Length: 159
Image 1 (cartoon, rainbow, N blue to C red):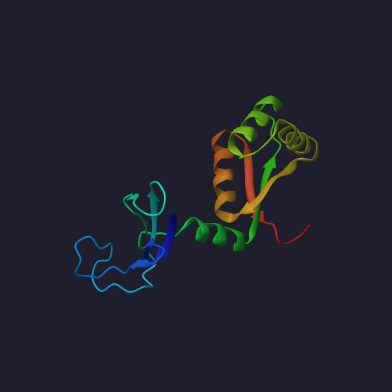
Image 2 (image 1 turned 45 degrees about the horizontal axis):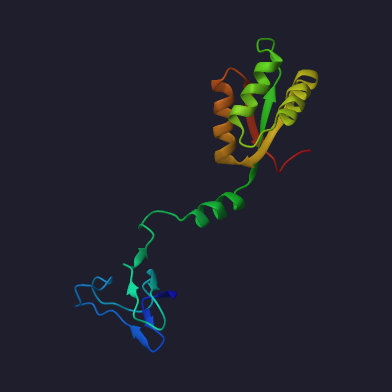
């Protein structure tokens, strides 16, 4: 039997453990209410009805002042998109540009890297990726750090 209930533990079908603040084994510190945001997972193992041993509960709490992964993804999705631009130069070989693109941009395939390099070579510039501003700035700095000419611009305006 595995149960996860906020603030209470279901130990058996007919028993509910409601921790008290004075109990030294209680996961609650101070006054304990049922809406504390503490998730507890209990696993009971053993033969037949009951009689099994309870494993130590795993308490998961978010650290104060630290955003969860969900909050970070949400903020990145709502931030305005930016284009990372790659410019042609007369210094770097085509093969090197493809290697840098694959190293710096997550999920970049050889075919996409070659197409981006070719477009920059023949047209003077190419869009590498469209992403959140913070990611675009990071990609641009990494491309520049590897000797390529790069910049970013908002993706919302223009063509």
